[in-house]
Length: 172
Length: 110
Ligand SMILES: [Cu+2]
Image (cartoon, rainbow over the protein chains, first blue to last red):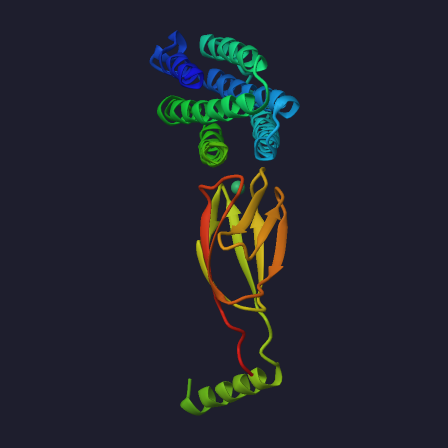
């Protein structure tokens, strides 16, 4: 329930915030949003590594830290190469705010309740980011290399979404 | 080319084939941008599969039937010798949207 609500909020933030409502996002904004979205998942995973009890949930959190760090490093290398400075924007800000609220909410949970809520949120969060990538970020990206990185990112995140769904199914 | 010459080449080739005992092959399978190619490969038991991961994230080749579970770190190549014949569906544990298949025939009889 909370996870669904959180996902709904994230979806609204990503798909209808002022920045995204504009005709087109710029590459510096897109880079910032993608990087922020990755960092949010790393922070969530690091919280899970200190709080999770189930071994599959812990392993999933480790995978998230490793993959999102690798993708974000690649993103940083690319913006450096392209001489692009990621630009903070309303979408990134709204995402960060929503993620901070989620961390606080999950922080109050313990044991199996935490495990379930974390994984449910991971399913929802990856779904939201995937749909934002597909419908907004990838179509808006002008630079071909940035677009390519986002397209690979989408496939990685879709994989995470399926992985999270498997873990969630095992917890039931 | 004259037929005689062709026969000669064929003869040399078959001689070469006899001289070298039927030895195991190495099959290369590339993982790039989360796509496994070829997605379907044919091999024999005793052959070596060489999985090449060109991505910045780690992948696995995990057999659905439990026959193998190979981890391929980012930008690395990992080899694995096929032990059993059979048709094996495998996937990546980290990104289950990566799926592929190996058709493994029994070891060639001498
Ligand atoms: Cu993978």
